[in-house]
Length: 79
Image (spheres, rainbow, N blue to C red):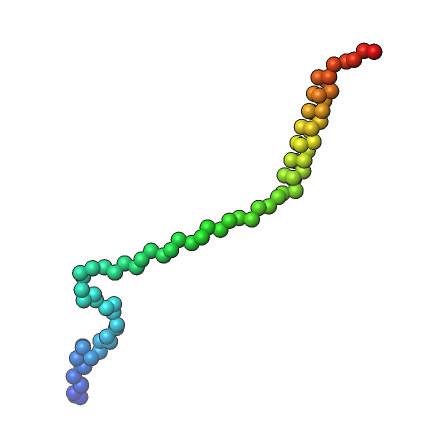
């Protein structure tokens, strides 16, 4: 019978993995300051063609209505 070599100690087989460092003090927590607020962006104005056409049409109808009311309000002059 052959003699087996004694097994290696467990501590040598175990591989040490780096862990998270532990805090050495707990007197206070370091909280980073709040960043400066950013400037709000302003949207660029834009005009939709259909909106422009609608406004022009409404303006034209209003002028026509005012012109018709003005003609109706004038007295009829008989000569």
